Length: 153
Image 1 (tube, rainbow, N blue to C red):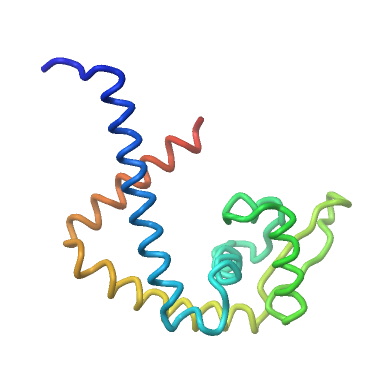
Image 2: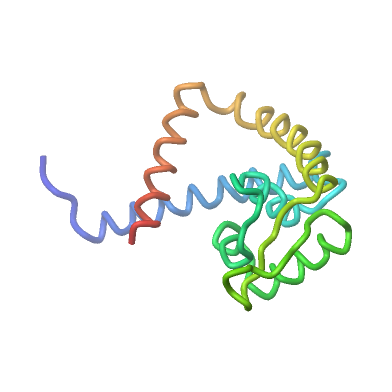
């Protein structure tokens, strides 16, 4: 078996990324228009979801920024809105005067669970008819592998 020329490999990598990106955009557009996100925008839900996964309950704002697709200033404004609505609380980091810690309030945790249940149903309605269980597991394996490779660079 002969190696593919570099140009062909580069083209394949670009086509692979384009396919992954377009699939993600199509799925996200469908999910955003579904019933789960009538009560809260997807970006706000993403913050609530990320905070719900914190073992300690608290997460630094700059760490949260690594998990969401928002600029630091946009994330700060979004967190302010969530705090004003009583969905998150913040406090200064005890070991860093400039740092900010965030956590879900009871109302934020309840909203995240409620929207999350609907969101999971919407996801299953999109994914299950399109991919077999084996294909879902393979896609998960491949995307985890890609994400791990990117994170280690």
